Image (cartoon, rainbow, N blue to C red; front, top):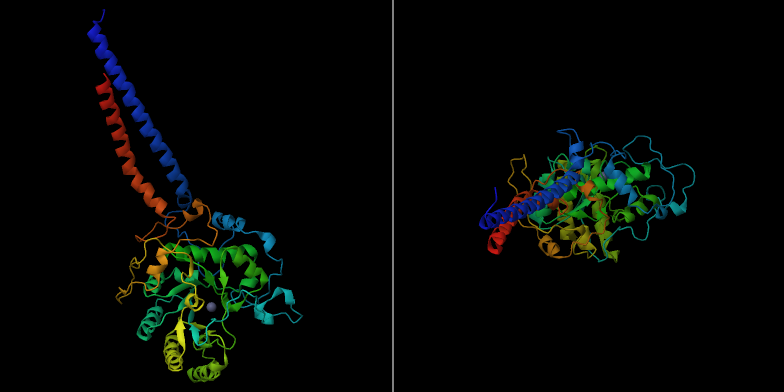
Length: 425
Ligand SMILES: [Zn+2]
């Protein structure tokens, strides 16, 4: 049957509309496919793990070096800058190394066994009477809150050198510590003597701890303290390559409070040592960095006594970054500061006090001194639990957001094509 001219015109209109609609639909579907593929890559590592398995390394020993994350981090190190020194012997893994009876190479600059400091080791504060206050080996769900309360009462702040292993038991305390105006730094993942570990294990120790703190706070740490002060030029070089600064403590200012829990020292003896130190302090041109811990109640009680003594003697306690005049104190800070800590299973109310120095820090650039792994590595960490979580995980939020926007774009494109075709025809 022959079609009338008007019938042909209507037919052409319908064909044009069909073609334009199809184009819009194909474009929308293409966009969906690309986005879905991207999301697939971003979440690939998460999906590769058995359901319910923590994406973080186990506690109690150095993280595996066979994971894709560690392999990617190892590749970021320029190994030509890391001296080939021996892996040190330890009588018991997890402890300080055993110093050899033979001579230790001076060039190794192995603090543990020849007391050597490298020029960039941080061992004190430049200004006289300034007291770099530091607490190691936390966080502890039992006592860290008491230490934070004590510091608030004394109106001072400190650097907390936390281990990754302990942090997995009380991650909310990381955010709480920052929200109370304190400074977080790394004390490695497992607290093994670093010189007793392989190069790859050292990378894993540093980077997993950094990653854990970053995920739970949005802050990428810059300073670390080697457990037992155990550092040589191999460890230092790896740390430098990854963007971390080595902090030890001032000679004679290890308060020995760690011995309280082992009952190998009394409170009275510690007070005596500290008193002697204070009587010598006026002879020093520079400030000090002390070594204290926050894992036992005796340590919190001792910190109260020593703080009272130090303040009476005109000492000015502050965190290590402040004592060095480092306004930021991290390699990266979050873009949304002041988020509340994650829900804590403790009964004590969380502090609502806003971070003091951190608001200013957050406005600073998010310069990242450490070399970040590829997005696939960042995807290995759990999904963000708080609004202000890390920038790498913003990618995940954007992916979710884009599901809705993708549908809207497809609908808008289809509508646009239909309207345009109707107007043209
Ligand atoms: Zn320690």
